[in-house]
Image (cartoon, rainbow, N blue to C red; front, side, top):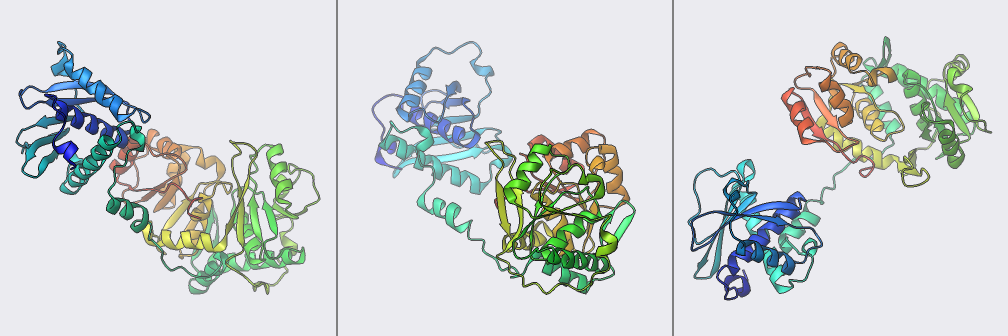
Length: 473
């Protein structure tokens, strides 16, 4: 620590004031709390003095330090012993050896300056974390004393080594992945396990070989309609086996799909189809009349199928390139008009390859898919099992909103993996669902509350927080 820290100004409790202020900044930066209580035990007294402190990111350190000085100069109130402390700073005391719930920072002057020892913190107080926090406290306090008018949010906490480790080393996560398109990986899997069940919807099932043949037939039809490299194709279907065939058929024709949720308002559907300029739309007869009027060619995957089924079952002669688009997904439009986000094959394959390793998926897994195609996590639910040899169970739309029906589906299919939002997970556990011990619970789409995470883990689930699929594709 610098000399300014080691030999503070000649005020009786100036060192204590500086350390209390620095500890307050550290706590605020870690917790984002603005109301803290930091205890103080001076060198002259053994009695702990709780000090309420208000701190925000735009507070200058010199202002915070003055608040601490003023607080310690006030007479003790009658309730000061009852206050809960978030941390305690103790001057010239031996570090405690017993268990401590809150953090205790022990400080004394040594031959080489100021010796600091951090103890406590409950379960978080392991040796590595305490060493790191002491280093960060020293870095922060040295910077604050060098420039006390700096807002505390701008004060550095990390040493250069810590910063390099966090920004560079932790992000050095490059790993090899196949240079192939998603539908090519699924075709390869179909060649390895042609008779295995690939996808299931209620009582309907398709093997990998059957899925491959149907997708190839649709691809031939789409090629005949002019679909080719990166031609956008809208897909607006109910959750069904036809939905999966439709997706793969578009990719095998070289195109990229634009998911249109049939539950979306007509004006949003019309905007997405107009903005994407999709010349072809895949749908079903029951949804045809609800589609916005336009010049796009309509293919009904149910009523048009007898004619499509006459086409070849081998893949069309289409050159695939992993740099080409796999889908265009539209944002919610919460900050303006929805925007189409373009995702190439190689980015999705990269995500799938990583996810196959961790959290991990194997051929014996059963993944229940509950997410609408209009959310990007649907790609993980559908393509990860199909590139792994596992089974996809497509949950009907009404089941995804009914906790009892969803619970029954998980049990009936012996599901081993479910990806859902915290809202859906809470719906399940609030309904009395006992959980499936060992099942992988992937959670994303919203922030995961700690209380909900605790309940899922207590139910025997292997919980993974999967926030950020858009950013990682």
